Amino acid sequence: MKHDFAVIGAGVSGMTCALILARYGYRVALVEKAGRTAPLLRGFSRGGVHFDTGFHYTGGLNEGGPLDILFRFLGLSDHVTSFPFDEEGFDVFRCVREGFEFRFPAGYESIRERLIDAFPEERPAVEAYLRAVRADYDSAPYLNPGAPSDAGGAFRKIFGPTLSETLDSLTGNELLKCVLSMHCLLYGVSPEEVPFYQHACIAGGYYLSARGIRGGGRSLASGFDARLEKLGVDVRCGNGVAGISVEPGGGLRGIRLEDGTELLCGGVVSTVHPRSMLEMLPAGAFRQADKRRIGELEDTVPAYMLFSVSDLPVPSLEGRNLFVFPDIDRIKDLGNGPLSHSPLYVTAAYETAGGAPRGFIGIIPSKEESPPFKREIVARMEGIVRMYCPELGGALGHTEGSTPSTLRHFGNSPSGGLYGVKHRVGQRNPGPMTRLKGLYLAGQAVTAPGVLGAALSGFVACGCILGHDRLMKELRGCR
Image (cartoon, rainbow, N blue to C red):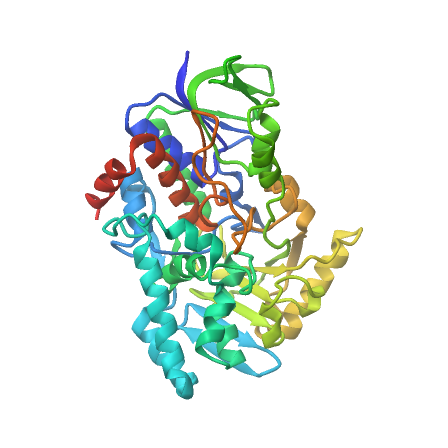
């Protein structure tokens, strides 16, 4: 049977592409190397506690928010139940050296008021920053289906200004700049590198509404599975793609699986890391300049992770996250210091059956070389948690860890980058369309990390296939 499209990779972006194309009547094959769809999204369980490895919380899932609209379009709303994070402080900033904490409340106006209370002399800077974030967030077409098409958006993403340049133009208060930059930990790029536009499109969603999903990433993956089955997508797991086949004349022929099976199709959407995609192409399919540019793409910072099961509930993490900085300089040149000097992100892990948090996940971005024994790095991370988060010391029970090598193996990230390809000023990331007719790209490298960024990349790629105006009109009908 010949398919109209083959989608490579069954993460959020790949499943989104498959659902959109199937919804419009195309015969779609979704191919995943792992044994199940969404392997990172599903996480794992230990001691009755479930650890989400690919989803912790998201912005834009409030009623009428961009992710809510995308989920309605995909038919996922009946399969996903969201809940709000603590509206009085969904994200907690902690600077150890300064002895300072700040809690981000829900909503731009509430954030504005609390920031001004904490930094009364910085009112103009706070207000200008939030206006700029909201303006850029609202200008992105797929984040706001009512927004006009912005042809200059991609140009701004590449050439800046950076988040650091924007903040420097507004204030000289280093502590305030660190507070406003802390969400860099959610996309793994330093403020001196990330375009302000990219930061605004990510952080802006959390400012509007930070929400979790009941059952975490597993529930979302199950919802995708149900919709893929409903729409008749041919899902093939446990058999990776060995190559993308091209006709002698240069046209796309299909894909070749690792077991030798060839799937003929008129179009392919690749959602894997761009360098992995290059390895699937025959010689001559891309120009040398394009291959060199893709091969030189920088990835986001690597990270070490700690997974801890507690014998007792962990109420301090219910509906909120911790962003801990040893000092205000640790946000700069993210991940280049030793492990003990790097920022720490902490989020809750819930019992398998639901209820209050009974464990946590700690993530430390660091380029430090992995030690020969994983237990050594786990012990060091436990010490960091005890030092910077004393309220969690009693929650350190059974612990496990992961290293950048784990990310390379399970996340298919060639360099172990926490969020795959970096989005930085001056780096031209691949777009959804390629020079090989019929080959499209999706995934966080094209748009942004996170569930929202991955889903958006699927819509952007499918917009190139179906027509952006057609897709945007459908999305507006879901508001």
